[in-house]
Length: 169
Picture 1 (cartoon, one colour):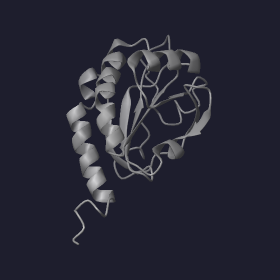
Picture 2 (picture 1 turned 60 degrees about the vertical axis):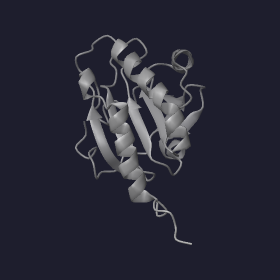
Picture 3 (picture 1 turned 90 degrees about the vertical axis):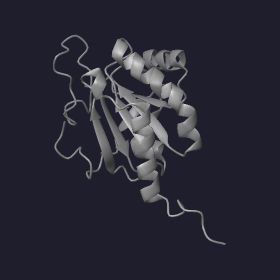
Picture 4 (picture 1 turned 45 degrees about the vertical axis):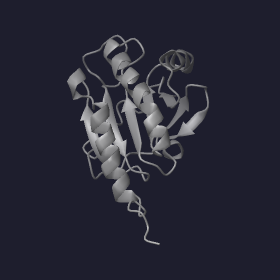
């Protein structure tokens, strides 16, 4: 992973095609809210399927808490759209089929010589794409649990919302 992609750094504002074939910018998808940006190996990986099913269980909470998810893989939009629908995910999936950012971000999973995917990596970002936390998910247990995400989102939201405490009337 690139040296600047650690807590305190700023994540680049990537531009990629989404699961529906539309070109999207990461900053627009984050939209002023805290976000989880998750790079994943591909639809075919059972570890990714398990992790993403966990995120599906968390998506209702994320939506009412003004937080976002974005998932990114090297799969093409047609495959990604079918995978997303099969999961029941409502968040945006981005497709880096040309692998534009794979080496730039230094997130190539070097042990896979068939698919040449991203190494599973999760970033918790602030609204300005500032990196709050990072998880290396090369091994399944390196991925964040839903509870770790809840706690991370709570801490990040508390730090950016001036109305965290109820205003005195």
